[in-house]
Length: 96
Image (cartoon, one colour):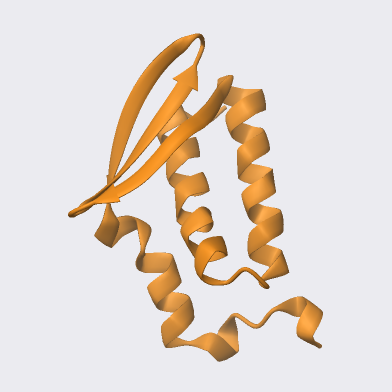
C-alpha cells in the first residue's frame, strides 16, 4: 500500500497531463486508476486543487480529516514537459 503523499503525487502528475491533453486516452485511463487508488487504498478524495506560485496545493478529505498537501510545480509538471518535448514517444494509442 502506498502512502497518501505518493498517491496524490501520482494522481496530480497525470491530472496535469490530462488537463493539457484531453484526447490522450492512456492518460485519462491512468488518472481513473490513480483516483481509484486514492479512494480504495487511502480512503481519500480530492476536494480542491489550486496552482499558486511555485506550488500546487491539494486539499484532501482522508479518513474523515481535511488535509492540505503541496507539491512543487517543477516536479509535477516534469512529465508533461517530457511529453511535450518528445511527442512522437507519447502518441495517443487511439490515433492509430
